[in-house]
Amino acid sequence: MDWAEATGQARERAFAAGALAPIDTHAETLSDEGLTYVVRIVRSILRKQRAGAGKPVDPFAPPYESDLVVGELPPAHMALLNKFPVLDRHLLAVTRDAEPQTNLLTAADCEALLRLLGGWDGLVFYNGGAAAGASQAHKHLQIIDLPLAPVGPALPVAQALAAGEPDDGIGRSPGLPFPHARVRLPESAWRDPAAGARVVHKTYLDLLQAVGLPPAGSEQPGAYNLLATREWLWLVPRSRQSCEGIEVNALAFAGTLLVADESHLATLKAMGPAACLRAVCT
Ligand code: AMP
Image: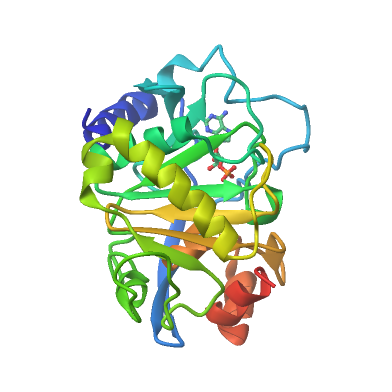
């Protein structure tokens, strides 16, 4: 399944039907400690609803809003458009059975992740818990386009990820200014998602261990962000949701941030994005 194409087509239909509430932003780039970050600044006043705010509705439980459905994602997910997109193409893979976002990823989640990458050369991310930037409590993976923005580098952290090999196995990159563990993803994993899922699931548990979050049972041992491209899988331990009022989710660790207004942009410039990212990890 070409998930990128299917998402683009579904987006056009949903937009025409008035089912989307896009968030209008403009972008700036900021350079700091050897990386160039893409920062989007919200123009419209719409804000994401935090889990627990307002009515306790689960938007990812059936019945699904039909305009948002892109398709079934085997073996256990439904692919839905993001109703409040900042980016043109932004797909959510929600578990068909209700499951908490703070549960550890399963082999089925890893298979969904690999199927997405197989049909879309994009960036998959997972916000493991509210402290990692999740606004919804129902388990969901997400995928967006690369390049991340028309301005700046396609994937700002790409070069840094490759620095300071070990070429195989789990390592850390001296080029990334925040705690993390990262590993190369073999092409065979997304070419054969059913088989690759078992390997990637084990690797994911090893990444958690490597950042000091030893997995046990079904619940995550602490908040974290997971990111994946066709080339890399990386995981970042989290201690808090925001720094100086700037909310940080997984995308920040790919090199792109979203700020609510110009005053938050000024704060980010003053402290530097790298310090901001470190502050939410420790
Ligand atoms: P996160 O904030 O990382 O938990 O991601 C959840 C995403 O779901 C956000 O980007 C929201 O914009 C999006 N979202 C919130 N409500 C809905 C909904 N009713 N249908 C589809 N997407 C939604």
